[in-house]
Image (cartoon, rainbow, N blue to C red):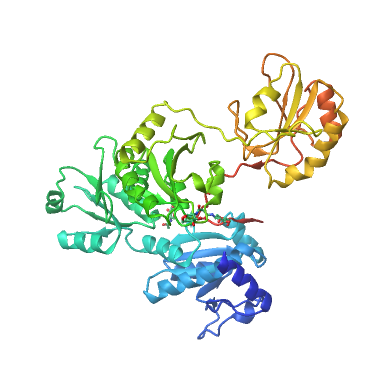
Length: 527
Ligand SMILES: *[C@@H]1O[C@H](CO)[C@@H](O)[C@H](O)[C@H]1NC(C)=O
Ligand SMILES: *[C@@H]1O[C@H](CO)[C@@H](O)[C@H](O)[C@H]1NC(C)=O
Ligand SMILES: *[C@@H]1O[C@H](CO)[C@@H](O)[C@H](O)[C@H]1NC(C)=O
């Protein structure tokens, strides 16, 4: 973020970027005088500048070639440029035999067509001069990540280990190391293992076929071991002899076991927490500035091992910048220390009943009870405002929704909104006008509910705004309104008792934001 901002600022000022990145828009003026022949390919900041004339030549000369297709106007490309150059510099410094290049996409339509480029930036990796089916780059956007992705393709993605010393050296150096023990290095399982190692950039991999190492670690069959300098120290993944090594299973195993038993929630750990794909998250809310709160962590951690892979234990410091998490659970900082469990798939939330002290035993018991379906999920609700039915648009909250919306004598039309949602704000005047128009109709209620602060047992709201109509009668009917959001169409819909030919909405609803799930791969700009 900061890098990107800085780049934009520097661009505006016409200054060169943090790593000496040139900013003049004209490519040719930047061409460095190369030694001799007209065949030389120009370079900018350590990046080859290719065209349809020079790509073939570059493929011949560089057995490992990464090519970025960029557009001069593309902001994401500008943000990537300094990282891309820095990656080239990192690799050059260690004499890695890999070359980074770029192609101005709009200026080279033949190449973008040939390689099916549909957005910028697009990066493709060519190996052994093969122009067919280059590998598409979907790795990290930071220099170190780009360099590591390339290292794992031009070098071995895992280190071959011959003896105990090799194993020791690797496990000493890294916090988490994954070693594959295979009796036959030619087998398919090894290929699967190495393929996983090519993409799991934040873990270091080794592999061996040495019988004395099998013996040393007490193995009698092919196994992948994850060694870590914390918690249990080691986790084994035996390879199934019949089905072979399954990439998905191994990958889930590694994500699960490379995490600490308890992870503190913050902006660095949150992508990992959500990438772990563990269905249940147990959150302990504490105020870390208080010693008696910090002490609870020991008990919390003690309860965690039996739930590994099933429940992810997370600590949330209410004294840090975590208000969005507190809001999501409808909690106030003063309520810490307290526990909440959420199933991230159903987004159902669970709270312990009563004031049970937090001990290893009570934490484990709460987890078990939720997993066994013995705890009812709780629903967020604001308090019913005293004036909830005084304005034309009635205010609904979780606590009065059921009674009002499913009133058998009323036709109720409800707008489910989020306070920050711009489409909701845009339609607000039309909603007010609608309520005004029907204010004297005893049988019609126009209402709204802030769906970020109120949850309902009957259904959950996934987009904002969502409009639903609850016609009078005993059958609890719910009709979703998907048409144009204006007074005229709303009125037609109401007058016909909830019948309207369905059309697509003019503006799409904004989807519900989960707590945070920031991916590593940057967004692309369409052509
Ligand atoms: C290049 O790669 C394609 C697809 O992977 C393959 O079919 C082809 O045989 C390769 N060509 C050469 C010359 O290696
Ligand atoms: C995710 O990204 C958004 C926008 O870039 C940022 O505002 C937010 O703080 C990030 N959240 C986390 C948890 O990293
Ligand atoms: C955390 O505890 C400290 C010390 O008692 C207190 O000053 C602070 O307000 C607390 N923070 C929150 C968010 O409650």
